[in-house]
Length: 369
Image 1 (tube, rainbow, N blue to C red):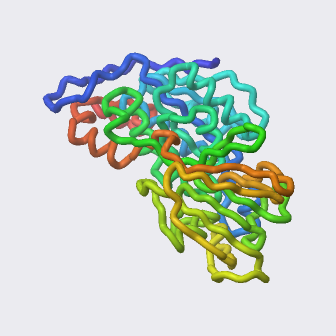
Image 2: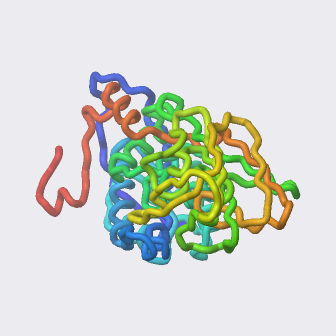
């Protein structure tokens, strides 16, 4: 574990506005930034921009600053192959302990799982995740009820939001410090609980799909003509990917207590022709045979042959007749509402009568105090 020492920087919390709770001595935010999100081949096959390591470095830096300004006293990160996290914090001089954890990184999805486990052991009370649906799925697999703020940096994103990193970091810092209670500004997300016939369990946060004539591990945009069965925790008509296939028929958002089930055929089959954005700037037709709302806790069976995909990632091949059982449940991570969190903080005067020192102020000869 590497620790970046920081200078003492007194700040006043003695204003007349009420504060929810004193800042916890070890209020800790874990920052998880997937270095590969926003860089996969789907961005080439569609029309999405690629995110550079410098883009991510800047987001990480803003998120860290926002967290500390809101009361976090300890920030946890891990190094990455592009040095986005390392370079983001090298020049920061903040009133917080900023630590790089020693986690083995292999540029694989399992990196996220190991990072979450390490941050949880180190006492993180909120996570700030920069990634896409797949990254957040790995977070949820490692820590099912994690309190988190998720910033969208992936390709086909439904679970994370397009957030300003400074404000996102501030929301995580407010919850981690105890200035705003998690119960006041978050609720568990929906998820799809998965159980294979052999007893193996898994989960998805947005979609579980059965694809015909596809391959596990493929990173290409999915072809709707291969889609046979789809279960959605969230069916968002304004999204891209698999979610709008259900969303354009039976919208189901974050707060709706139901999911959506869709059955499809190939392009030569019968059913309703549906035009859907399967990736940024990439429209295709799906042939929908049936669709319906799915009650929370209701079990659906997918039957092979085919490849089952979770949140866009092809996971496992189902043999002919092999089954997998799925249920949409509200048992996912606790998603912190950034706008609501900052509104509550404003109402309580959390940011009043507090000073801030930043090395950039010294360069510009600006003194906030």
